[in-house]
Length: 406
Image 1 (cartoon, one colour):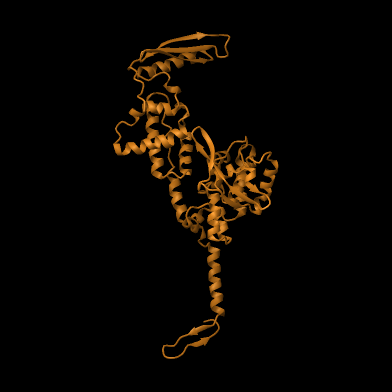
Image 2 (image 1 turned 120 degrees about the vertical axis):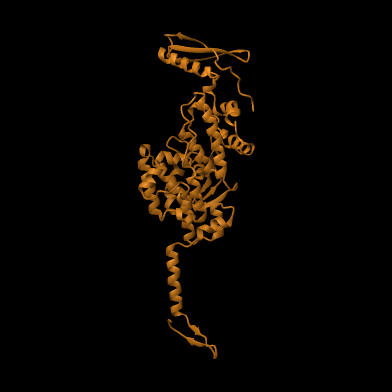
């Protein structure tokens, strides 16, 4: 880690404003200062004189506290490297290691490329939910968020931002839901196909421009028991139209600098059936795709889809609450499909391959019988007891054969 720039408290800045009437932004403000034996400068153009003067005054105020005038324009990774000694002061050694691991492995790859002053509460919220979607542990997310809070708190002190955007709340609720999911993933599933269709239509109506693609993404995810990232990754060539089998090869996920495609979570391709309910929409998308490597599902502008994109574009949280599915998440579309397959009698070893589960125990959680199956089991037992011959045993004599219901 490089050392932060050592600026003297009360640093003097030389400043001037140049009026250039022939330029689109006519006022060019500039500040100059000496640091570490070098003459440095920074300039920016403005539409009017008051804006230019305000910019200079702001830099002069920061400089009085020893903050370099170029600090406000640094990306988060560079800024964090400069101020890290201040951000981690007072930490115990046992806490320092997990905090720094969170910074290097989560914060910098996800947010490091963004200007520090452009980090908002919404940006941090999406980053945290992205870490959760990547199945980071609760402690990993907590440590990553804690070091980000410390760095952004230093940005507040430096006057780069007015409030700390890393103080987000509510994310631990996702882990409580995940614990419920481990106990009974079936409880998170939608009841039937009509419920999926209703959800899809409602999401389309709430989206900007009523983009029909959002509804098709929802139907495809539920019908194939796929993750949203896998839906984003599907190409025309991945689907065999003769057998209606989709070979799942990739998923879209967050990476340094943006979204990328990588292998599936299990690192192996798997085959998933395309059910009749979604074949028409799949066929239409395949027909409109020019190349075999064309994506079947994209956003309205052709961009890649993530669970966060789907949530924000469709006002997901509001829609599911209005429909009575308050706790339904995008990942629960996958639970829905797997639950239906289990109820349809798909053998557990086949269901495991479709789901891509590494453990058979995970797949078996979907095999818990629903209430209809339990009722049917009771009726079957009653019918059996009513028709089978029953044997009455006597402690002193031979068994007596009895027929009928007893």
